[in-house]
Length: 490
Image (cartoon, rainbow, N blue to C red; front, side, top):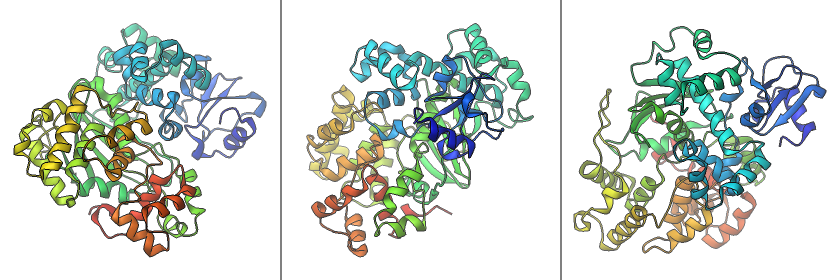
């Protein structure tokens, strides 16, 4: 969008928050870059230039605005609605791959050469993978500086910097303030309010956001010991690259309140990225609902409760295993099966608040499970053991870099995997916004009640008009039922 100057200028002059994260406004006279909704008086159009990423602004020599804090705007929805090289690379960078494995590791995961990845990102985003990762490190550093009492040296390494000097230079360059000055400007008492090892932060999103089905789904399907709903918050354990964590996510009208407890602060960036992905916070509800409203039979559902998101996952392999456990059984039975696996094979964790006891078992641990101990039909045992063996040996990859169409085909080739299981994994684990469930009984029943075709083939044909947002149409169709997944817990 940043190449459409006239449209960008209109968005800036109207302070339209819907475009935050889509592009960034750099002011050539002040050398500052802002989000489109910045509250200051808009600059003259002749003094504006537009960039697709904060990293591109920083690379061009602009520093972040201290009023609108453009580095904290929601992420671009493009990276979650596309499956091309750039989008997959951006999802991996957000997951901290460049910090952990470098650019060669990023390229290897994508199956391209380092040169090709760098060239593609530079052409589309105005910055290469190192600059994009650097911008992310700067944002993480700012968050730690302002919300914790950690020493600056600890913050530098937790944010992913290789040295304290690089940390100091980057913070000064990006924010025009030293790390100590950033901490001085932070609201008083913010860091003191957090217990040791705990961070409280706000996760922004584009409005509207309807939390009912989002948190209702997560709470209704929560696996005991791994997830729970407590005091208005969804809590769960996280398996992270350097350790583990516990997160509590609470919906509020203008943000998601996030409280993170980490065993290793280096996991902060990854934990935030996965929580945003879990709640689909980078979606663009205006574009999604606008297209779905074009269907006169869907429009009343959208108008009744706009802003529905797709509840996703923090661990793609975990969700795939749980999808198999839930085949042809009730939600309660699926939770029982998963809870038994967690108790027997999950890694124990300490929860200061009680309630959470384990991490969900790793694929390596599940690969060693004796199939005869699983209380399920033999055919589903075969499906379970085949899936976990493919995940454990790497022949099936369900990471954020996965190609949606290719992975769906690989899932369908496994025994016991039909279209419903493959598509629900594509929708909730892989993040495909166009995944569709025409064979789902709830979808077919609702379709018949609304006057839509109820046979899978006819419904798929009708749903072509909803593309590329069919996964969101599924949420609106599901929401007509009185199942607990559709209601915010009380």
